[in-house]
Image 1 (spheres, each protein chain N blue to C red):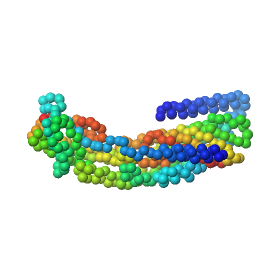
Image 2 (tube, rainbow over the protein chains, first blue to last red):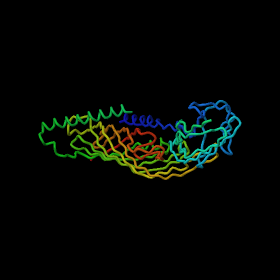
Image 3 (cartoon, helix red, strand yellow):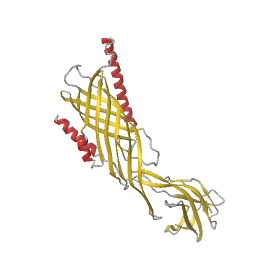
Length: 149
Length: 229
């Protein structure tokens, strides 16, 4: 009888020690990933110097040298985000329209907002063309947009 | 995890086969006399582990349950378990969760140790079995929020949702008769959620009768006091 209660108390101690890990270990960043290509080739190209910022926001990239891809956060409270890109001293504007959706990851990580791209429009000072490769923007590290120069 | 399941299923299968074979031997000896349905006893059990676990869980979870188990033909132990459980938790992401519900489990146990005589005064059991559990309830998720540091925006929502859950359990446990008709023992369970939640959808933090709902499989333990009628 005494052995039973000792075992019971010990077991409770052991199993109560198996507390849940509440650390968030999932990816939570949701970014529009664009890569740069030469207009007449399928090869990626590096931009000598690029500055990118959301309209009326701080810089996301500031005079970054020799870069061939960028990752941009879309405004979760709106269905359109405008980015200004300064490419080797010339400005182009990227207007991204999209829909938002709640995405619950876990109680450790909480909720994120994912996006589905509707349209992407750009000015054509330096940028020649663009192509939407993947419309679903979530935590997956995949290419969404190809920008041709 | 699958090897654990395989192990448990093997034990369960072996148990069933042994039980059936034992039954066949008895039939040979007693001809058709054992074919009839005999309700040997009914045992009522109460889970006493919440006395400590509620305290050890710092009040995040409460869980109370009881069971009714019949003994049929001294071989089959169908069981109905019912309880009330819930969770109130401020989670790591700042979500305040609350939800509670009644839950139900139905299943069958098999005794894999044989008592030496049919009419001995002390009966001990080593039970292995399976359960199907179900619960349906409403839950609240308050302060589900998302901060966007770059665009300087924030989203905050209070969610009220419903959840229906079906799960499968494999169980093992012992019962010791400590005095006439009075039993103590424990049951260990591995529970596997059958209800699939859509990826990205809101779901309850705690499912009554199942446990914390982060993983598809969870362990559970009950410490029981029972009385046989």
